[in-house]
Amino acid sequence: MKYKLKLDYTADELKELKELSKVCASPMTAVWLVVDSENDDDMFIKLQAKYNAIEHEDEFNFMADINNVVMGTAIFPEKEYVVHDKVTDQYIYYSIKRIGLFWGQSGAKIPYKNTKKWWLSINPAYEPMLVEADNEEY
Image (cartoon, rainbow, N blue to C red; front, side, top):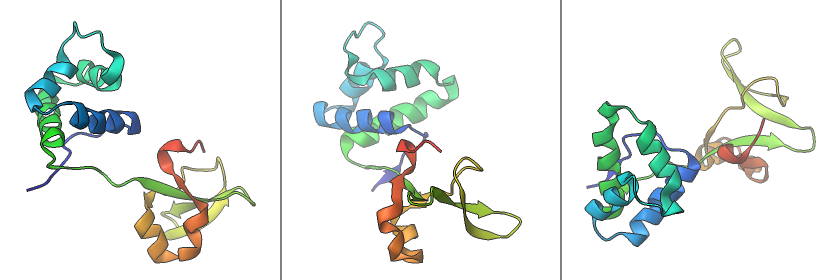
């Protein structure tokens, strides 16, 4: 059975989770590498920072996510993309007033994010304009 990650992770944290699954055969070893405050290895610095910042109530979910990643039963979130026409420097936004998607100048609002599959189902011509949402500064 596969399980969605219980907590939200940044792109860097997701990279470290994937790396953790490569270097650890045991979930207990993986948890120890992340939560051990005396571990001076900078390999999982983002996950260590996340652990130090999470609320007590989220600790179990964090350990469950590490367990599922190491055991190969975790479902990672799909990458999200925005549509950016670099020629006109416009993005696709969602408007509540207009109830739909529309083009607009960059910086006006936050561009609408969705998966690559979703964007291409709307219009395959968007493919060359897709930019990973985490890597884009609006």
